[in-house]
Length: 144
Length: 144
Image (cartoon, rainbow over the protein chains, first blue to last red):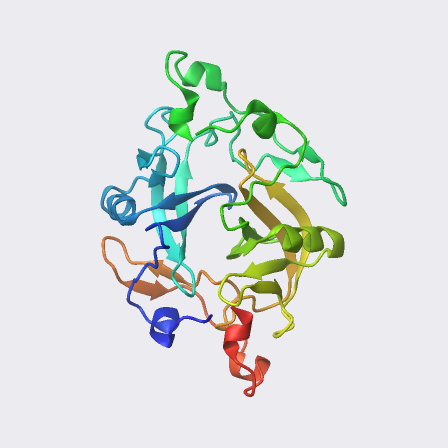
């Protein structure tokens, strides 16, 4: 359903959180345009992201705030926040270093579906070694 | 929580649908890299998108399949489908014409949050007139 004209064509930021209090946030490299990851924010994560200029998400699995890069060092500096027509999705245009995905790739989207199959093909090379970045006595789970 | 190694580093496509049977899909212009919209697919929409090469979503508000462009003519020809590390999000790299958002803009993300405010600023111009494209005897709701 289309949102109200005020929501769609106004200048008041009224993010629409879902039933769980979350909004989808797409992180996109401000320089290359590459989509790096898709995550979720609650109102607090969004406020903190706006205030601090660093991307802070809400981890659905751990049910707590998650400052991107706290474990890995691969933070995202937010240069711009865009919102879509019905204000239920955000794009964070971010400045990043190498290695935004906890698996070792620059983007979480490192595989493509082969045409007319259900098979994936890698389209990226790893840019860092997660074994080195994530200490072995910590769980990799912390970052995703 | 991190997904299994097979999910994250394997070549088998195993899209993870949420409790409502949906997966997030980001449409990105294959030529410019611009993120056009974020929508949702159920298994059927995903299958049909793969088979037909046109983006087909599941409309949460109308609770039915929605072939992008059926009303407006602004279809999305899917050139590539990428999946993220835990396979719960897709990127559709799409070839499009002018005007992908039902409000009249090329992308649904036509407003940016002014730094340190809750106020939006328009960062795009309309590229078509929705009044002309959507027949007045049809509801604009059909397209969103």
